[in-house]
Amino acid sequence: METASYNPYQVAQSQFDKVAAILELDDGVKELLRQPMREYQFTIPVRMDDGKIKVFKGFRVQHNDARGPAKGGIRFHPMETIDTVRALSLWMTWKCSVVDIPLGGAKGGVICDPHHLSLREQEQICRGWIRQVAKNVGPVSDVPAPDVMTNGQHMLWMLDEFEMIHGGHYPGFITGKPVGMGGSLGRTEATGFGVVYVLREALKVLGLSPEKTTASVQGFGNVAQHAVQLYTQLGGKVVAISCWDQGDKVSYTYRKKDGIKIDELRGICDKFGGIDKKQAQELGYERLPGEAWLEQDVDILIPAALENQINGSNVQKISKTVKVIAEGANGPTTPEADEVIKQRGIFVCPDFLTNAGGVTCSYFEQVQCNMNYFWEKDEVLSKLDAKMTSAFTAVYDLAVRRKLYMRDAAYVIAISRVAEAVKQRGWA
View 1 (cartoon, rainbow, N blue to C red):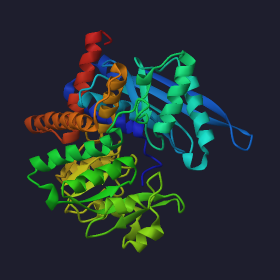
View 2 (cartoon, rainbow, N blue to C red):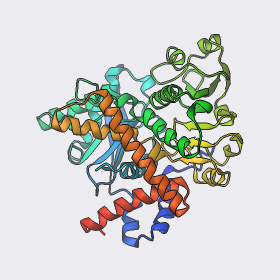
View 3 (tube, helix red, strand yellow):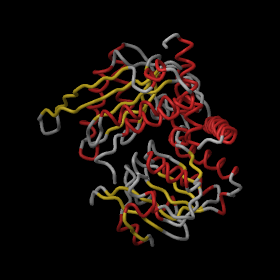
């Protein structure tokens, strides 16, 4: 692993710089877009269950709002850093732009581990986060959402605190809320299903039918579970899943060569997507080292966990059978690994296109809240399918026309849209 030297913000900027050169952006626009417009770093004091005060570090980074209110999740993670949040805010801007929804990019976080916090302590962190940024976020300026280790309950506590401070109802302020409390049907499935909508289109252009393909997946959280669910419904076979083991503090890969059963694994995992290794063994799963997911002889790899998972030290382990990498996670592939993947001719469905189903459905939720009229689940998912398919087609057509790598083509479309908005507003 390259974690010691890996800086996601530098990766995000280097990706941007490469495309800025392709687009021949002028220096002013380039300088404006390669860094966030606003950053907030703050402390959140919480009285813990033992009566002691503990201070948590929180962040909100707003990268760009030229195309609309900033949008992006809030993650709770013990290894959170400001540079991770900065990088994710850039990626959110490009993500909203590539699927052509009228939003900008932001990201937030708190350095904490929900595994070791009671619900009351988590609620205090949520309310404390809002108190620190209540003047700087809102339904027409910055709309948060769940991310790693946050969920609908966290969003509802945040909404409640925001509404108490501002004295009104603002359901469009935050997305990812529980259904019945302003949440959208289909939101739970949206990111994972979006990954497979894009993958399905990629298989079409490659002349592969889903039922003749196999896949290996990293992660077993919400995104991975729903991606596996829809991919297997299309006839594909997942043979390996890698996930974090909270007890052992390491990752394991669980393999079943004749295909994993999604409902079976869901029945033996915790709320964070950790699989019970004893029960998995009883069900006939082989337990392999965490990185073994990358080495499987499959057609498709789906990294759906954290950033920096395919890097210079492990990219050579990818099997020669792999034809497609569908990036469900944010920033899972480092630029060094990307070069190797490109040379090998593996078709990449880039992260900020492939996992944009979540933010697209969040946008749908925002629209539904603002008009106080909610759609049926089938309508949400069909609109999502149409958006993701249209975005993939635009990126693929540009890639073919200009002989670009898929990631570069997606960036060219996303960045050019934001650059145009910045120029039209007279910012640069």
